[in-house]
Every structure is written in C-alpha cells, then in structure tokens.
Image 1 (cartoon, rainbow, N blue to C red):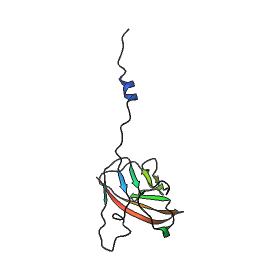
Image 2: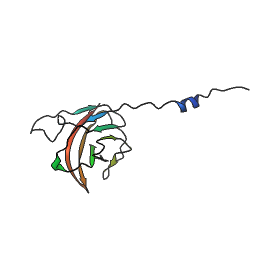
Image 3: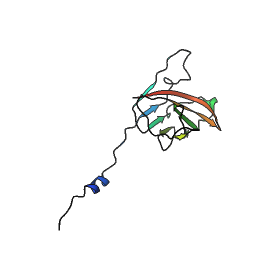
Image 4: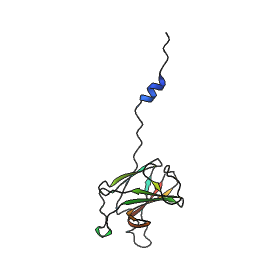
Length: 140
C-alpha cells in the first residue's frame, strides 16, 4: 500500500490569515464640518484593502443633532454606499458585506490605492441625510 501526501488537507485545516485592521478614529481634528472657511483639514491616510473600521466610541456627537443611524461612504459618482450605524455599537466595519449601494452605484468591492474617500455619519430619513460628522481619507 502506497501513502500519498495529503497537502490539500493540511491547507484546508490551516488557520485563516488575519486581515490587518485599518481603523479610522472619528475625531474633531479630521472633521470637515468644524473647519473655518479656507482652512485645510487633514485627511486620514489608510492602506488599501477589503475593509475599514470606523470607530466613534470616543467621539461625542452634538446632542441637538439627534441620533445617528447611518454612515455614508462616497468614493465616486458611481460608488456611494450606506452602512447601518448603531449608536450602541459605535465601531463598525465597512466592507462588501456591510456597504449597500445607493441608487445606481456598483457593489462595493475594496478600497483601492489612489482613492480619496468621504466618510459621513449622520441621520438618514428616507432620502434625506443630516450630516453630524464628515471626514476624508486618502487610500495608499
């Protein structure tokens, strides 16, 4: 009887490779809303990849603005997405599983080097979106 290597079995049992977490921490320093006219607000710099974690756990939204329920991601005219925002869990992952295309936008796939993205958190009611925080990120 001859034994053959079961390399395919070893591969199937190998632990999954961890994806590095890109975390965008929501803060006032990067807010496009609090900038004075003609003031340059720094962009976040994030690595290209399949997902991005947006963490607002330490950020306090203005109380008069209501309760945030949506994150809006804008990459291009045909790449606009909504992600459900839960104030009880203010750290969410934006990925192909959570980013739902708005209108005629194509499905979200990944963040690509060279993109500049807009991330906005606010209140979505129907087609009306009230921005409570917005920042920009350059994907490298």
